[in-house]
Image (tube, rainbow over the protein chains, first blue to last red):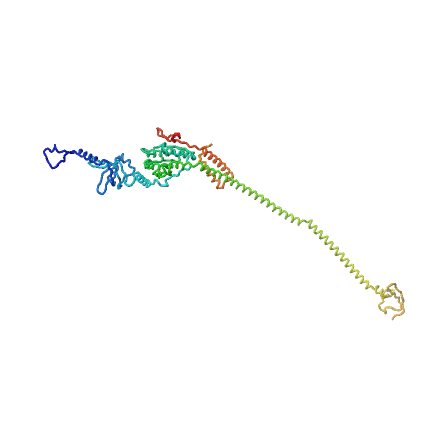
Length: 443
Length: 78
């Protein structure tokens, strides 16, 4: 710093001796020292504008308010620590040193830390990445792969020394663990964690391409135990999110505790609130499996019994029907036979003959009876006629005193006295005996 | 025992029970399936009792090839 104030208008003779003339470098250097000493490290608040990130990773931008503007630069080493993306128009609070860029004679803020105003930096970073990946469709449900039931091979991407793997193994011990677990040890926080996690996910996918189908990793658990948001940060990184998204093997994320949600959780095919739960999701309880197995076995036996019973019933039914049919037709035939036999019996000529015989006898009897009757009738008629005849016989009249006179020798019955003459011989027939007389007179 | 995966056996068993449920099998088929089912059930049961987990660590050797190395569980538990 100069000890005198230069008077630019004075032209003293010893001008060159008394007046200090700065070189540009000198004065710039002095200004720089003054600025740095005066301000040192400062916090500055303003709106970002003119952001420009160059290939080396250094970020140039300005901070402004209504009236003024402050040039800022953030070198890569610091910029890489900023989790969120700095954008124009963003209100930020910036920490750094005010200094001079000698080459351009320009003062500026050499930023070391940047915080978004009103929201945590990590929070903002998370929101930004979430939005970006969401727009790209990394969280879409249709992209999520189903988690296999009862996988035999599980890949674990986590730290060998962390709580996560211990929890997972504990669960496997407790439950049905017919499982081959392959651990890909990675750092889960700090430097290099995100790259290692992403690489491990890729490695498992590559390994699967080399394995036979039945030896492949069926599901991966990617995660770690609980910690601060910074500890879990690797699981909020884009590189990890993309590795999860691109994995052909289904991934269960298991980061921290129930309350911790990371980008990895959003991309993963399934989010487990903790590593223990992740393990439980792929290893069912022994009792559940036992129960299921018993159910199936019981079902199997019952169904088989049903089927055989069904067949048995069918057979019984058929047999029954067969017996029934045979019996029925037998009965039918028997009755038909009986009917025919009866009919035949009815048609038996012996019977007919017998009948005719009976009838003949009957008729004979009738004839006999009638004949007898007739004979009796005729006899009585005859008797009556005889009686009548005898009653009419002249002899009968004789018995009542009458007599018959015959002329002899003619033996003609004398009915008229004129037929006779005296001297004729007359025979008179009496009831009993005859008299021979001679006519002595005729009248 | 033929190494059949538990879940495969279980799935097969489920399928058999389904087939039997449909009830359109001949007696011979049903009997065959029933016997197969019983065998699967027995295998599952056995595996359920004897299941043991296996732990390996995936490492890449110098050539960049993958190797599976068994890991002592007690070391992890420490």
